[in-house]
Length: 273
Image 1 (tube, helix red, strand yellow):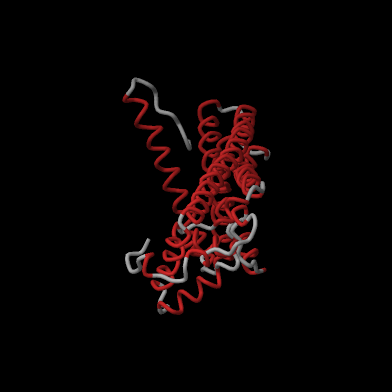
Image 2 (image 1 turned 120 degrees about the vertical axis):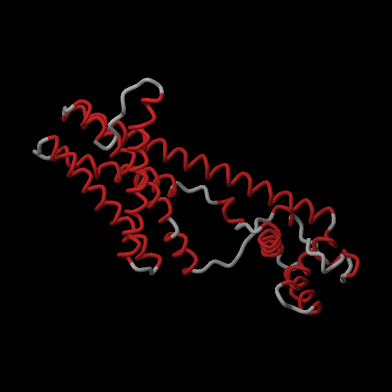
């Protein structure tokens, strides 16, 4: 609670802090929704797309180029590539689902805790919310008027309290959709296909490895280009940024595979060729 307000200094009395609506304790936090808010939620899925595609490209690229150099057989490369695609896509999708589920449970528990505090000491919660509005620049009278009006709508009142005190969006607790997990797993699968395509073409293994690397660079650039379009940034700069990060990650993986195994008496792992 902000230190600028003491519950005992705030009116009205406790009887008027929360309206006497039967079953108000069962309300869910609610904020009036807008089309712009829903559009932004869809655009924020770019996180799953960028993460999934980049991870799919780099992980599968490291596996298939390493196998290509070590085995020199197209069939081994394709099989290992598709196994990496399947395992990675399932792992990413399930991991995203379980992560979101855990987040929903934490947010739901926080909301229930706040509702218990509202029931146990409504005067203190009223004062706390008034204090937050004073921090936002309202006078004491203005803040009390706003919060008093909010108490007439317990669902919006609860939303404001949870948002201001914990800095969370309570709608996360109700977001049980599969869009995020599907986007994560699907984007990983798409990213994994990018370096595999070169080995499906009638090219020599040496040329296929180089083509796979080129496809990976193009794929990473496309991800950055797409992300920049949604965020209204320069798509060329964003594309090069994603490519740069990808090259650094692949380069570090190559160095690790080349220098670390000999420290344990093993031959270098030819990740990336």
